Length: 348
Image 1 (cartoon, rainbow, N blue to C red):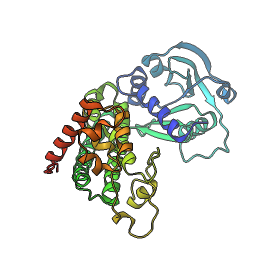
Image 2 (image 1 turned 180 degrees about the vertical axis):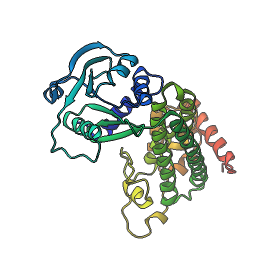
Image 3 (image 1 turned 45 degrees about the vertical axis):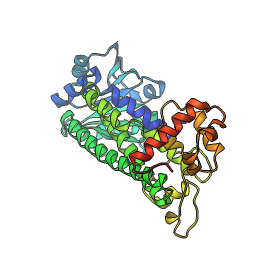
Image 4 (image 1 turned 135 degrees about the horizontal axis):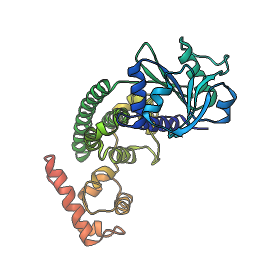
């Protein structure tokens, strides 16, 4: 049994295989342009054969031109599950009529029922509405045309850029507050919220790019730059502020509400909990210092009582920490000094 997340990943892989420029997409577009319509099942499994009536055996390597010609017949086309071979054509499918469907046309009703009954990918190409519709299990998805998809992707990238700016600004504010020891839980939750909104939008745009195939190469590189270090920043935020150190993922139901985010961090007080002062452990700021391994950062945080103690530590105090030594102690002191100066603080 697949989880919801695994189903999404599997469907995204299907969209990649049907992206513009692929042989499969070329065949579908040819059928769409000819306005003949088609019903295509990917998988010649026994469950498909049992609901099939008539038709004839093809068993030939898939080519867009072959799909175009076979789609002129009335029945369904059955392909191998990987889409590399055309197995049957002009086949009439008789899925279980008791399976619920939201569709009205015969071809689309059949496609949806076959997908639900078999779990296989089924594609219906509308003869009159110029639509290519994908069905897989309970998923229904209409393939947008390339121009619409490029426009939607560009709009998505612009939104990602705005979310990235908001996340970076909230990080900068949090940095200054951490150095002055004036962080509230609201500051932390707002930063996490901005980061999770960025992550969600990035996932959406990544799906659009997958559908673009080779057309999305440059946009994919730009998205990668915008999303760089996001996972590390969010992970360190949780490590810095979770009431008890733990690993968990936020989801769409939690990051829209600051109070729910605070509860995921372990703060359950009902009385102005977001106004409560909180104190960083220092993972995020210490990770900005070059050549300091994660295990050393962990040892430093465990050794000192709080982050302010780390900020004020001298060479001798840091040298006592396992794995630090004189060179790393100097790097930590200089790294923190540069961070403090960047935000207008001088080390006392």
